Length: 606
Image (tube, rainbow, N blue to C red):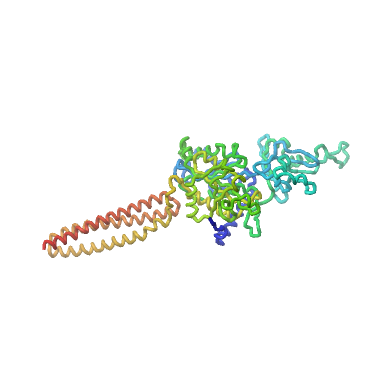
């Protein structure tokens, strides 16, 4: 199946919009290199769009209604956003899901030590990393240190131009003969990923206290680092015990390539999907079904822990929202989750000619090919997979094709080569329909095509507004502005015919009146009675036809403001009114035959 390159579909205006939204996306990457930073950035953004904190609404005892926007943050590392729809929540939600954690190095609880004249921070790598990629690159420290009195000190060192950076050392090539013979997984051991944070000893006054003479004490380099931490952040060595410090690549997100067609940055797995999911919520209007966006932590290590998708924080948040909406019961929560549809967004691999043997060319995504749908994830024999139903995929295809969205399908590499998963399998345990809509990434250096970001964002907005429960609506055609307008010409012609009949009847009545005044023929009385009935029926035909036209116009207005359900009901009433008008017309035609029968009987008697 050949797919058009998305770059070829953009107009010059769309290309300008593309550059604008990608600049915003790069800012998000720069400001959110950890889960906590992502949550802070997201909350600041969505509150400007009218979202309110769930906990505050619970304390106020507020009642939620259609269109209300709420969010719930859990431990500053996960968030659930809701926009209340027109239908009851028991009919299900449209859910967007992604994760905001990325592979990194975590600082241990007793990390600071000195060896060979260097001060180090001991680390433990987090998630799936190629350890050899972390050596000799500039690194930054992000996170928080919480002191015993509860004071939270935010740390962000290495991102500003005048900040120092940190690094993991590597063996120089001249001495690396033995190292180069090791397998890639062993070239750099996990315990060797300690970052160098200093080399300058702290000088103290000599014991003899001679003026201006100082000397280095025991572990003077480590002491020098601690002295800087005390002076700058008012923290002590024991405060590392209650710290969450993450080591990430330093530097800003950059445009890549002479044509600037790609973005190169750390953390795009999976913040590219997190940002687009959030933005899709902000760009979506009120829909029939409640919209939801879940952005969670710990996906890189199995979605475990209190802030991972396997925790009950999301289910608890849904229960609280339903309670404020006046719908809560344990059964209703289960019904809501079971009737929901989810799009789990995560990254997928893109074809790399350099490593072509790892891909099945027929079932791989390509940079420039648009967003990608993975029917299933997992490894080897679909182990750990969430496999979407064919009916659900058909429903997505219908939505995409109708909106002319450029998309592709793929698997994550060749069978038995590798694999992966998303949070979709966890929410599928509730019985909801879940599908993975990945973004296309090239490799661990995290390159992706700008056009792919744009089409992905637009697709999530589209799906948020259009996604239905396919079990109820898979055969239902979407009502559009053109549907009611199709009746305009038909109703106009019918009304013209009705008007002509009315005019002819009015002329016939005047003629019969003059004839009756001259001849007083008893048959004229029967004709006048027949005409009176036909005139009233013609009036009813015209009124019903006009009401049908009016309801079609009103239906178009509600389609225009995206009130699909009301529009469908009004359009249905319009169709019934038109049908009633036609039925009255049939009745009137039958009476017209009776009028002609009077003349025929008169001719037969003569």
